[in-house]
Length: 83
Image 1 (cartoon, rainbow, N blue to C red):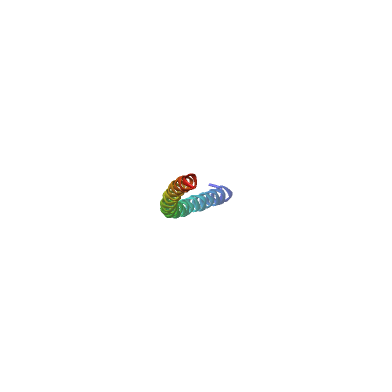
Image 2 (cartoon, rainbow, N blue to C red):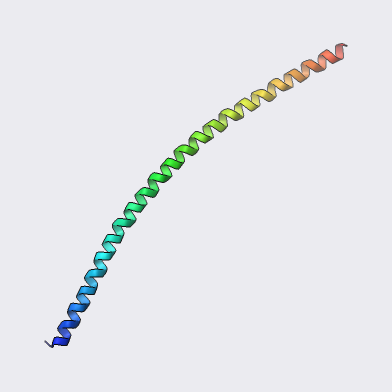
């Protein structure tokens, strides 16, 4: 074979090897990033669930407050009517 052909094959083979190695390393990095995003998503979801639970408790308290307020309003109205 000609020296030029051998040099071209070595150069092409080396470039291909570098490209394949880079792709494999990047795939591992992307897999690691994907795992981190999944972990972050799980953490955020659990915190939002906690916040939603607290909001449900607050909403129940507000409903109870307005129920009692309406009851007191009725009682005041009856007292005013008696006078």
